[in-house]
Length: 186
Image (cartoon, rainbow, N blue to C red; front, side, top):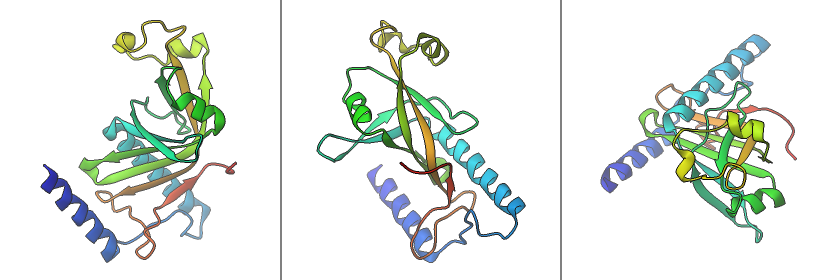
């Protein structure tokens, strides 16, 4: 298995190094072309996010170090806002309270693609939302929805996407991936 991953990583690195044609948002002159490109990137991102199922949530701890952990998010809303659940006693909660800037990283081996969503996290402890955002089978993790279940929503600021399968790759020199900007970074 490890050899397979190494071969895959070497293949991906080679593809990036030889510079597959890069198609980036904003490279066309017409707004219609930009809109179509944005839609293509968002559609591809959704497919990768759905196929990946899980993603990494990256926060910053009190000493300034990035902290990553695997989460089970819901599929993104139409505006690419992502919701997920956590136990309010986890370390991610005070990290988000101290610095709401987070990153979600999805990787899909099947499409040789990834999505990096940089955004602002917000803790949500409202009964109505907790009922809306619930997955069957979570009872074992959250036996008391009032006290052991907290929601987090991530509003995107920037989304980066690469999909070898769909011919979406980074800049051939810098490897900077195509991106969609959603708003002003804080």
